[in-house]
Amino acid sequence: MSREMILVLDFGGQYNQLIARRVRELSVYSEVHPHTMSIEEIKKMNPTGIILTGGPASVYKDDSPKCDKKLFELGIPVLGICYGAQLMTYLLGGKVETADVREYGHTEISTDGTDLLFTGVSKKTVVWMSHTDRITEVAQGFRVTASSSSCPIAAASDWTRKLFLTQFHPEVTHSKEGQAMLANFVRNVCNCRCDWKMSSFVDESIVTLKRKVGSGRVLCALSGGVDSSVAAVLLSKAIGKQLTCVFVDHGLLRKDEGDDVEAVFGPRGPYELNFIRVNAQKRFYDKLKGVEEPEQKRKIIGEEFIRVFEEEARKIGAVDFLVQGTIYPDVIESGLGKSAVIKSHHNVGGLPDCVDFKEIIEPLRLLFKDEVRRAGLELGIPEKLVYRQPFPGPGLAIRIIGEVTPEKVHIVQEADAIFRDEMAKAGFDKLANQYFAALSNMRSVGCMGDERTYDYAVVIRAVTTTDFMTAEAAQLPWTLLGTVTNRIVNEVKGVNRVLYDCTGKPPATIELE
Ligand code: XMP
Image 1 (spheres, rainbow, N blue to C red):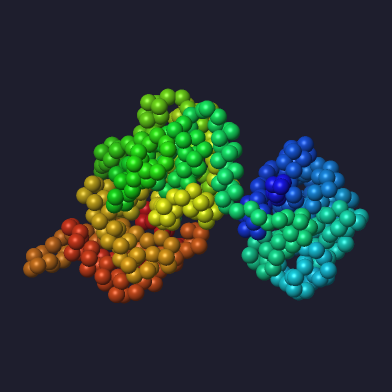
Image 2 (cartoon, rainbow, N blue to C red):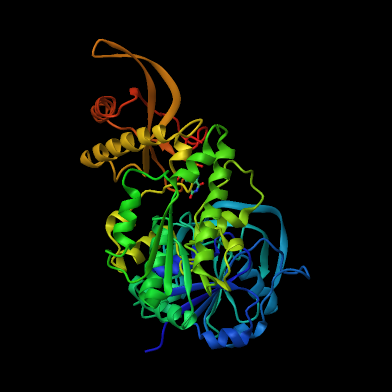
C-alpha cells in the first residue's frame, strides 16, 4: 500500500506548519517544504495532495515567491490558501488585484453547498480572512464556490484538474468549519485512507535516522526536558550505542531531578546509549558568585554550559552528527528575529560552534509540543517525563532573585518539592500549566517558637496559559495555599514567610527573572 502524504509548499505564511499539523490531525502524514522545491523533487516525493500556503507577497511582483506552473498538471490535487490561491489563479490565467482595504478578521461566507470542499459544511459559515490582494477573476475551468460581501471570490474549484482554492484560512480555528473543509480536501478530493498514526512517525523516523547515520557517531545534549529526551530515545532506538548523551548537571535543577534523568537514561535505564553525567555544580556556583543582574546570570549560565559541553565533546572526539531537540515552536521563535529581547533564552542545544561535527539532526523539527509528547509515549518514555512542566535552561537561577548561592538553591528545591507534592495531592497539577516555588531576595522578621527570626520569603507561583506568551495567575484554593505555606515554613530551614504571586503575564513574566 502506498504511503499517503500531503505536501505543504511554504510561501512564507505564518500558518504554514499549522496546516501540516491540521492534516496530521486528520491522520494523514504531512510535511512543509520550501516553495522552491523542483517539480522533479515533488514527483519523487509522490504526494497524495499538495497545499500551497499563504504568504505576505503580491503575486504580480517579480520577486514574489512562485512555483512551477507544471505543478497543476501533475494530476495531484492542489489546494491553494490565500497567497497560494492567488498564485494558482495568476499562474493559470485568472486575475489578482490589490484591494483598497486589507480584509482582516472574521467574515461570513456563503458556500454553494455542492462543492467537494464544502460537503457537510453550513451554507453560511464564519471564516478567517487576512489579505490585501484578492482574486477578481478566476482562471479558466474554475467555478466560484463561496463568496462574502467584501470578497466575491472566497473559494473556487476546478474538479476536472482537482484544483481548489480558498481566499480565507481554513487552518486556523477562527474558521469555524475550517477543519471540516481540510478534511473534505484530504478525504473527498485526495481520497486519503487517513490511517497515519504517531506510531508511524516514530517507526519511519527510526528507519530514516538509521539510514542517515549509517555507522556514524552521534552526540546529544540531554537536558531531561521532553524535547531532548524524545529526540534521544528516538536516536537510541535507531542507532543504540553509536549515540552518546551528555547531561550537564549545573546544580540548578529541581530536587532529585539529576538523579531522575540518570535513572531513565543512565546505565540502569532501559535504553541502549552512552550516558555521561557531568556534575558541574561547583563550577556554576563559582561563576555566579556575587552576580545579581538577571541577564548577566543567564549569560553566565549559557556560556558556562557551552564550556562544559565543549570539554566533554573534546574528550569524545569528532562526531558525525549533533542531535538537537528543536521543535516547531522553537523554529518560529528563532525566526522572528525582530521582536524585543525580554529575556535571552537559553536552551540546551544551541551549541553547534563548539563541537566537531558534520551535520545537525533535528528529528522533531516538524512537531508541535503535544505531538512530541505523543511520540514520547509511543516510545515508552515514562509519563512523568513526557508530561514534565516546562523548565527553563538556566534552571533555578532565574527563580532566585539576586545572587545565587548553594543555600538559596537548596531552599528553592525543598520549597518547590513541597509545593509540587501538594499540587499533585489536590489534583491541581493538571489544571495549572506551570507552577513552582521561587525565592524573593527579601528577608523579613518573624517569630518561631518564641524566637525572633530574620529569614527569606518564598514566592509560590502557578499560572494557566495555552501558549506561555500570556498567562493568568491560577486561582488556587485558600486551603491548598495554607497547607503549602505551613509545610514550607515548618519544613524548610531559612524561610519564615510564603507569598503567592497573583500577577498575570503581562505585566509580569512567568519566571521571576
Ligand atoms: P517567561 O518567564 O518569559 O517564560 O514568561 C515563558 C516560558 O518560557 C520558559 N523560559 C525558558 N525556557 N530557556 C527555556 O528553555 C529559558 O531561558 C527560559 N526562560 C523562560 C518559562 O519557564 C515559561 O514556560
